[in-house]
Amino acid sequence: MRRNAPSQVLAQLGRGFLMGSADVVPGVSGGTVALVLGIYERLVANIRAGASVLGKAVRGQPRAALGQLAHVEWVWVVALLAGVGLAVATLAHTIETLLEEQPVRMAALFFGLITGSVAIAWRLVRRRDAFRVVVAAVTAVGAFFVLGLQSGPVEDPTWWMFLLAGAVAICAMILPGVSGSFLLLMLGMYDSVLGLVTDREVVLLAVFLVGCVVGLALFSTSLHWALAHHHDTVLAAMVGLMVGSLRVLWPWPDGTDSPELSAPSGDVVVPILIAVVASGVVLAVTSVAERRSGAR
Image 1 (cartoon, rainbow, N blue to C red):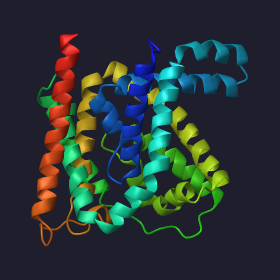
Image 2 (cartoon, rainbow, N blue to C red; image 1 turned 90 degrees about the horizontal axis):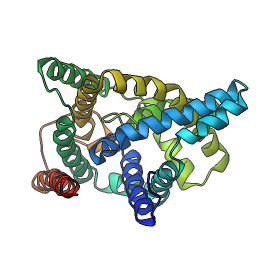
Image 3 (tube, one colour; image 1 turned 90 degrees about the vertical axis):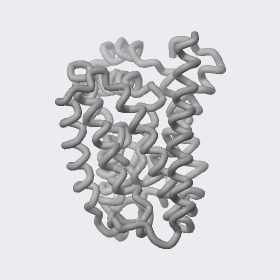
Image 4 (spheres, one colour; image 1 turned 180 degrees about the vertical axis):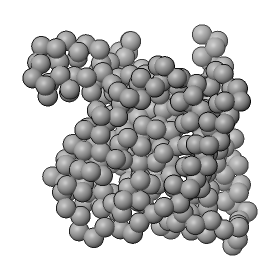
C-alpha cells in the first residue's frame, strides 16, 4: 500500500470483504468485484510478485526470494486477504442458508449485480473496436456452454481432491466472470469445501489453502503477462466471461442450484425488481466513486 494510513487499511478490508462475499456464491467471482473496484491489475501484479518469491524459495535461492519480498505491497495484500477471510468466515453459513431458502430471489440479486458490473467493466476497455467486441462475444458464448456442465457431489472426498479443488478454484476466483464456487460445483466439491469452513475442519482446510497457493502461483504469472501485453483484449475476454456467467445466475427454475434455464414463472415480480435495483445500485455507486476520484 502506498500509504498505510488506518483509513486506507480499513478501505482495503472493505474491498476484501466484498470480494470474499462474492467468492462464497456460485456464479459470482471475486475477480469481478476487484475489476469493478479498480484494483484488479494491482491485485494481479502483487500475486505475481508473491509467486516469484515462492518460486525462488522453492528453487533454493533464499537471497533472491528475500529481495523479491520488497516488490509485494504487504500491507495492501494482507488487508485485502483479511477482508476476504472475514467475509468467508462470517457469511458462508448465512449465504448457504439464503441460497437454500430463497434460491430464486438470491439468484436475481446476484444476476442484477453482475449485469451492472458488466457495463462498468466494458468501460475499462480502452479500445472498444470490432475485434474486442468479437473477443467478448465469442468468450461469452463459450462460457455460457461450459458453465452448463455440472457434476453431482463427490462423496467422502480424499485430501488430494481438496488440494486439486483449491488449485482449480483459486484460478477462477481471480478471473472476472468465472466463479470459483461454481467450478467447485462442477467438480462436485462445493458442499465439501463449504463444510470445511462451517465445521472448522482445520487440517483439510489447510490442504485446500495449499492447493490455492500452488494454483495461484502457477496462474498469476501468465495472467500478468497477458494484461501487460494485451490489456484490452484480455479485459474484453473477461467481460465475455462475466456475460457468459449470467447463465449460472438466471433465477429460473432453481436459482444457482442448476444450470438449467426456463422462462420466468411462479415468483417473478419481486426477483425482477431485486435484479433491477441491484444493477442500478452498482452503476450508481460506481458513478459516485468515479466522480469523487476525478474531483481529487
